Amino acid sequence: MGTPRFLQVHTLHSFPAALINRDDSGLAKRMPFGGVIRTRISSQCLKRHWRLAQDEYSIHSIAGTKGAYRSRNIVERQVMGPLATVKGVSEEVLKAVGEAFNVGIYGSNGTTEAGRQALLLGLPEVEYLQEKAEAIVTEYPKDVEAARVAAAELFGSTRGESQNFRAFRASAVLPGGLEGALFGRMVTSDPAANIDAAIHVAHAFTVHPEESENDYFSAVDDLAGEEEYAVAAHIGDMELTAGLFYGYVVVDVPGLVSNLEGCPAEAWLSADRNLAAQVIHNLLHLIATISPGAKLGSTAPYGRARFMLVEAGTCQPYSLADAFRRPARAQLEDALDRLSMEITAQDENYGRKGIRRFMSLEDCAISGAERLALADLAQWAAGVVRAGEAK
Image 1 (cartoon, rainbow, N blue to C red):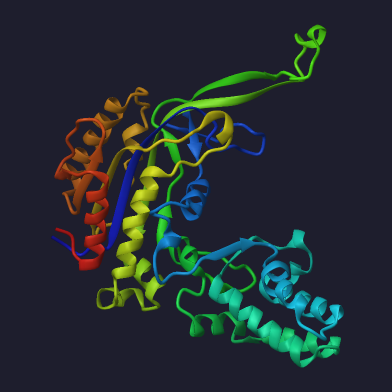
Image 2 (image 1 turned 135 degrees about the vertical axis):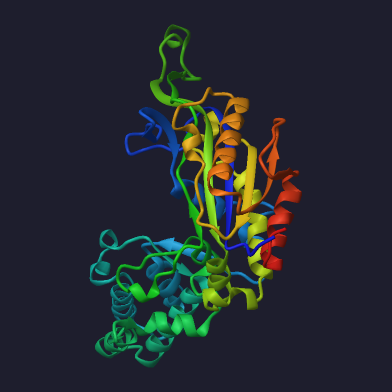
């Protein structure tokens, strides 16, 4: 029994003949580990698919939360766009206010789309900006310079903190949306707007050396005549990979409660933890069942976790990646043996600190862990957060 400072989630996913995550050249992402090249899935790719998933366990299906937009064009499309129908306001005023808002939100490079970073803003923040912009254009419908000055003043500085983000935090719950509360955000134009991520996601990698093939394909023209039939209308190739991937996710429970409820992290045990518990419940389902993947139409890269281990405890999190520093065979049973040995070695040398539960499609034993189905595992993890103790 103990206070669950962290939840650690370890998984094994299998994907055959797929191109899960591509690099800038269209090839599968890779990484060297243990002197061997592995296929990799980036943490950004994993988080995006969990964030955008639309199923019964979507994070956006959780009552009492709001979403967010990650874009370089939030001002044009979500703030100023709806104001184009306001009667009596000149296009020049709308343009001047939009330019001032872009600079205030995205920084000095915000005057051009290419100069902006893709910033995450929660719906409460977008609604706040639209309300302020509407008030300005309504007050100065024809006075371009006055509107520009009023918009710029909204983003004035006091002690290094921009007034807009201070207002966001004071006026709304989850100002950065649920995505910001979970995965954090960085605002280079205003560090005061940064949100520390409560969920830390490692890059997944194959437990064995990369397995890849260059797939040659051709497309036949359906309207080609008999004399043309042997000639392909298009010839190309793409890389396909197969692999058993180790994934690792850490949830900073006090940080999650703090981001969701607006309380100091050190006061998380006295805060309402029901929303955090529901987030954890849905997140475990998403980690287990949502598959990222390029080339969906030609590879159908959908797969569920073959194994998931959740540990709740107070100690510094520790990855089990070193179980695969020496490459394993590309077989689930071998990967499970490696994980089991690594966990046992950790326990023998550091002592077992956490409480464990696991799900596995293959028979296996994990030191100090009870085996559960996914639904029960998610309920257990949510209960740990809700109760503020693991047992």
